[in-house]
Amino acid sequence: MTKVLVVDDDFMVAKLHSRYVSAVDGFTVVGVAHTGAEALRAARRLRPDLVLLDIFLPDMDGIQVLRELRAAEEREGDGRSADALFITAARDAGVVRAALRAGAQHYLIKPFHRSALQEQLQHVASLRNRLDALDEARREARQEDVDRIFGTRPPGSRELPKGLAARTAELVERVLRDHPAGLSASECAAAGALSRVSARRYLEYFAETGRAEVSLRYGGTGRPERRYRAVS
Image (cartoon, rainbow, N blue to C red):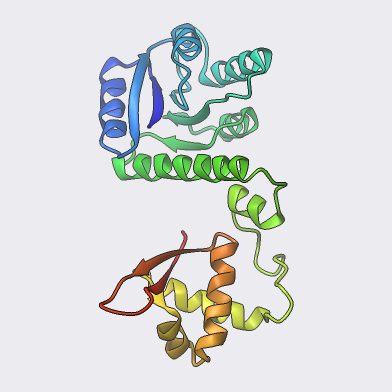
């Protein structure tokens, strides 16, 4: 479970955000704080994986809370660190910039639909899983690992393996995104007017670099069919 600390000076808003978080599988609210000082004490005591932070708090702003939280984590030096997601009415570009530089994962402006928060929670969980998987693999990070963690690089900056062509890669990726429910290599080949072998090479490359997810469809006999779905 991903443990979440909710920080908002408005008691009703904090309760609402807690309800949103609890509705997402794999997340649990371990504490609620209404001031910056309360948030820092709760973070030390509860060791959350994620902190939902408002900017406007009665004793200090959320940016300062996050900076102090980061400083405390560095002093403790045990490698544990909480992610932070700002949920606030603050729209000033300088505040957004400060939140980013302080280490926020994202910044949601109130009011918002709860699906927006749920999407960000799922993104945080996915990012933590990728980092954990890299730790468990006990190897140095490859560029594609870093790309998956930091996000997709601009088109054209990604180096393709020998034997893969940029134009065909763009075609296969377009077909992949045109089928959000997923498709097989044979279906991709038919949609892109490619050979099945060629389509599968590109689909497997996308899976290796984090741009596609692979699932298995089991039929009555024989090997399960590999299905590919674009990662948003």
